[in-house]
Length: 120
Image (cartoon, rainbow, N blue to C red; front, side, top):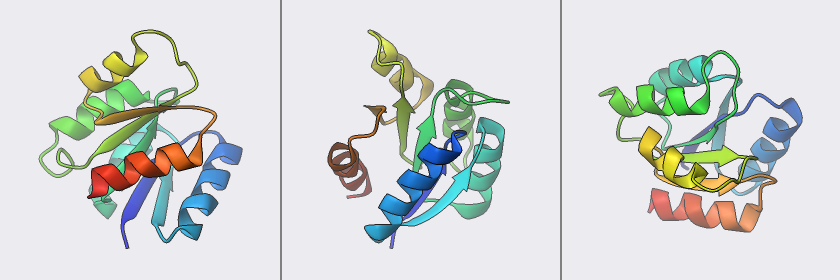
């Protein structure tokens, strides 16, 4: 069973996505900000990280850079999640170190395809 780290500050979004991923057989660990997400990634060694880009303390852009630059977490695929689907955001996420990008509100079938592709 793959372990996914979900870094999301919005409690309603976090709970909903966590439940939906667990129903599909994933183990889900969570964090509420970028700094917490880095600590959980180092402690839990997840198979994949879902990273909201608009986070308190340390945003997703900064967290992605730290995670990709760390020998312990640099290999973990990251999917950027953002409600700001403006031109250039996907490229910005990739430059920050993310492997994939998805927009909110979450389209679960589309997100699951991206998760399964990165875990394959």
